[in-house]
Length: 99
Image (cartoon, rainbow, N blue to C red):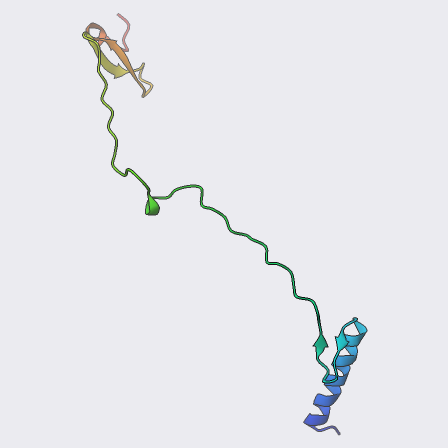
């Protein structure tokens, strides 16, 4: 029957034999000799192209636009569709109805 130290030595020799079988070189102490320095790490950095509300840049105030209408014109809903249009002030009472 093998004691724990003998079991460890047996496992190490089997391990070293397996390392040699896959083509690795070992030094006198049984460690792997490697001249391979590895590969360059790929650059997976991604720039955030969509600005979010937690990092707004520049003007952060709400812009308001003023319109100047010609005399006799007003703004009304365009045929009950939700958009707006410029109409004559005289037509605002009959807008959207057959007359």
